[in-house]
Amino acid sequence: MAFMKKWFAFFHTIRAKLIFGVFILTLPMIAMLIYNNFYAIKVVRNQVAHSYNQMTQMYMNQIDSSMDRIEIYMNNIVALDQDFIAMVQTSSDDIYSLSKLMLSNRMFNDINMYPTAKSFIVYNDLRDDFIDVTNESIDYDKKLEINDFIRGQAAEQTSGEYHAFGWTVKQIDNSYYLIHTLKYSNLYVSAIIEANKLMIPFHLLELGEHGGVLLADGDGNAITNAELVEASGIHLRPQQTEYDLTGSEQKFLIVGEQSTNGNFSLIVVIPDEQILQNLPTMQRILLVFPALTLLLVPLGLFYLRKTILIPLNKLLMAMRRIRSGSLTTKVETASITNEFQIVNTTFNQMVDEIRQLKLDVYEEQLNKQKEELLRLQLQMNPHFFMNSLTILYNLAKMNKTNLMMEMTMCLIQHFRFIFRSNSTFVMLRDELEHSRNYLRIQELRFPGSIASAIKVPDYVMDVAVPPLIIQSFFENIVKHAVTLEEPICITLEVDIMESETKPFIVLRIEDTGKGYPEHVLRAISKGISIVNNKGEHTGIWNIQRRIRLLYEHEGHIRFSNRLPHGAVVEMKLPMKPEKRQGGEPIV
Image (cartoon, rainbow, N blue to C red; front, top):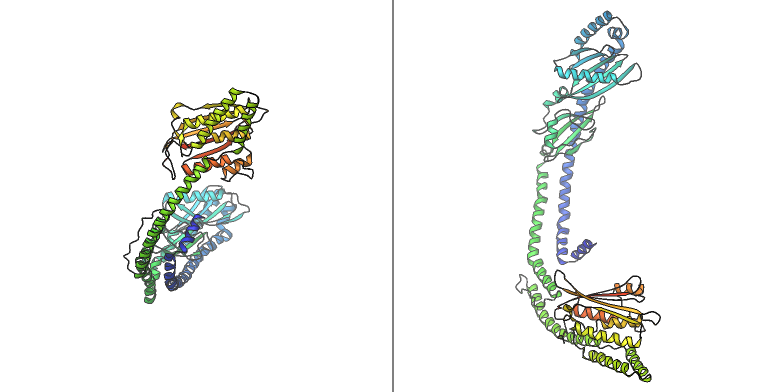
């Protein structure tokens, strides 16, 4: 949300509109040129891909055709060769050996007609006997591993007397082989094709220095020419049938064709740079032109930035500094354009006038704030005054001279403190003495209903606090919590709390009354005034207002309820506040 607001604000600046206007003029042309280039490249790639796709289909058909001939030969052996059938049916070792020899000789003569095949193998799983006819020499370890693979196929549970396993890709050491096996009863006929041997005709293709042809299995793993795939970071898709563009540092066009006989594909890898070499010269020029245009756009923006945006930005920065309160800010009048010279000169004159006007307003506000603080401090509850006179009258009526004298002295001290409290701060010891005097007046008014406990260490007695800040809450407790049914206890605790920046004095006032109503606590926490039409809670609002005026954001006051019942007020005030607007010396 914040990011959207910043973007919205930037979009409505002159800078954004200038940039937007430049791009409106240049981007459509650049976009058309870029689109034309990419379209031409795509057309060339499609043509090349179509051409190589036809070629791969032709070569793949040749590979499938040679594999089909091998399958036909293997089916003829299984279905028509008498020696093979005799090996299946006979239980005589002599007949089996003779048939094996005859079949081996025949296969040795026939394998030359199938140059793709590396070898033919006949395996008898009951006798664990092999006939191995090869077209060329094969490593002995590889031969054993191929035999083990055929044994594994024979060990699979297959239904029926006849079963075709299909062409399977098998890796042996670093070589890959295509193996096809037919089962008839207890005999298995297998044909083995070396994958690299299928690639011999493709060596004549001109695919560039980094191009090539390879075979890949059904999972997209190269089974020939794997070093090309690894070195170029080429990603092959499983069963590659459509052309693709891939590669890490250099891009390659990949064209593939799936075999109809086995789970492998023929893949042609063409370097993309070789394809684009065939683009016409005009296309090359059009390819470079958008890049040149994009280079000229920053130059134009740089010129606009120097002539318009930088002078405008200086003016905006000066406005921000003035908004933050720095009225000594000046804007350089020297500018490339005459318009900005006039604007800057006029702006400096306006700043001078605003600074002088603000000084006049500032002095007036100081006077008003001083008057407001004095008025807040001198606010007097008329009910307190009337109740005090009533107490004096009752004491005189009952002829309680001593209590009447004490009450009169307490009132004298109380009003003396009130009428001389026109200063911003007083010593904590004076505020405590005044607050104790107030509590004594209330104890005379409500005998036996008020008890108090004031715990203040000596080392905080000389700390400066706003006048009446404690007595106001004592008065609020007496007004809202004191009843004749049950006595109430008022507790005041004062201590010092250290912070990272400065020490604070913490004043905590508790009572055992009913506590604050929940709606009052919610209103106070939200900063809503709780003063009603009857004038209730005026003292709380008074203290909050004075703390804000005197301490700004450094002073804090928190209201809560205690368990099982009662109210809690906690004030946290800086011990040595800076001199505030309208402040007076401590008296």
